[in-house]
Length: 440
Image (cartoon, rainbow, N blue to C red; front, side, top):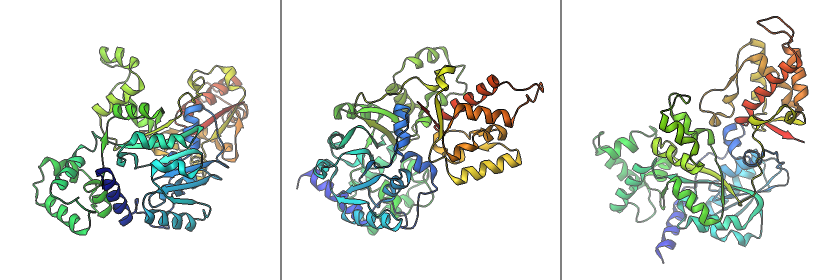
């Protein structure tokens, strides 16, 4: 058996023993709005094209579906889509089918198949989710090329690498335990107990222990140990390597999944008063250079989590922040489907009744670094959007009814003033994709 085949077999056995993630069968992501936001085709498609897309009838692949929790998230986040899963672990496929059936998604299709063999399915996909898998492949370029071969022209891939910088000490731990022979075969209870004993015996100021064990969650359960200290085939990548691999695979970078958390300017105390050198140089950096500088300065992200697709398919148009008044006249405003939920609606109504600010970021927290609050009467303008999309003009008319008089001057608010208030609010909310703007 070749080294590559031997490593693939080790990975398969590890996930046969413990399919990932280890979520109880009855646990649903139905109200995990941030999870659904990231697994929605609508999110990625709008971010690339500034257009809405219907999920009904779309075909979505969960490549390396594991225990099926992410496949379930894809099913919940994309109503009417057909969900297909593949995995090299037969036990994982069995559990995925059981999980999807338990939650009422009986048409889920699961196949025991390697990523590189995807074309054998004879299917084309609108969206491919390959989460927590790419960094395990011996040849990530080949894996991406296999997905590209089954991706529709306007299709989008979501995938990720482990960060070399953020996980540096976990990789050191893996090398340590490989040196001790604890990863020669599929790690089990004995190997995990040896790891615990070794770490416990180290002084707390030993760098490996301080930076990986003590800096991690208190609960070091079996899943945590296997996915960090004893993960077969684990590798780390940098942003530069990520872009090189995309180029070699013939794919185009779209965006980081948690793109707002990769904003380079957020690392500085005062974005409007940068040192002269940075003020002149940062605007000239490419997106790749900005992301690379971020990971060098602040390597907090475990995953280099990104969307990509076929080159030349992006149709972003003019950014909303640059729209002229005429651009707004034929726009229909929609709430993002994962924000348009009953919990958020009831919270908004309560906020309006209590005259307190409404916190939008409670429902999709991972797209904003700080809580996003909207004054209650302003937020009340958005309430009809829970019933469906509306033209901007109707929201302006509602705004005039809610606040017809200027609170300072006590003069009537003009239609033009209300228009500016509403379009200003929508511009801010569209930046975070709480609202989606559809131009006719």
